[in-house]
Picture (cartoon, rainbow, N blue to C red):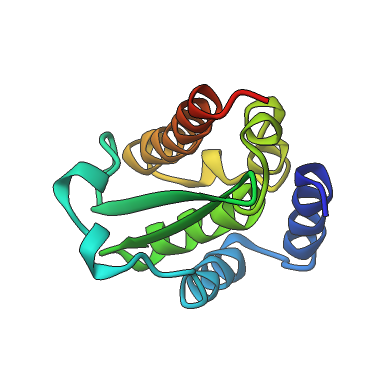
Length: 141
């Protein structure tokens, strides 16, 4: 599935909810199924700067695709990073760099977060893309 197709799937899922309380609950549920970061990677080096909550993110390259794992100490933030991992994990660095995050605007996520959480969302996306840049630099195609 392409990044665009995954985002369209997420947009469809969120369109089923009538209000933002239901959407928040769904995001929290998604956080429970996140590919959890291994304890050895829960270090200060892997904390995403700019997030109100602690968010750890790790990436590894397997078969030219980046596999992300993450965790957070806040349930809503954990759900948000789970959404981002669903979109970006298992794709090549170039696919990640070429992708925009249309689903964030389409589902209204950014405007329904507090300013500090919205900044955290931007920081998470930025960090995912930085991993893609780093892996692309290491393994140019």
